[in-house]
Length: 91
Image (cartoon, one colour):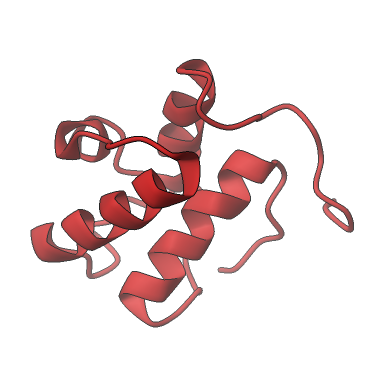
């Protein structure tokens, strides 16, 4: 199920997943590998996220945080993206 991103960090991660998977019918708590993701797509996502936040991100971060919500939280906790503000139109 696709949900509106609640924070800029969530929006960033969801966009990376959607681009890699070619779809956006996953929830923020869905495990990437359970919805059809694989390690080659992880590399693509993390490279893209790294470009967006301006630093190289370790692949291990994704494997430690395999949901949109967890990865967005990890990026926010490291100060790489703001995470507290609501996106326009989010519910």
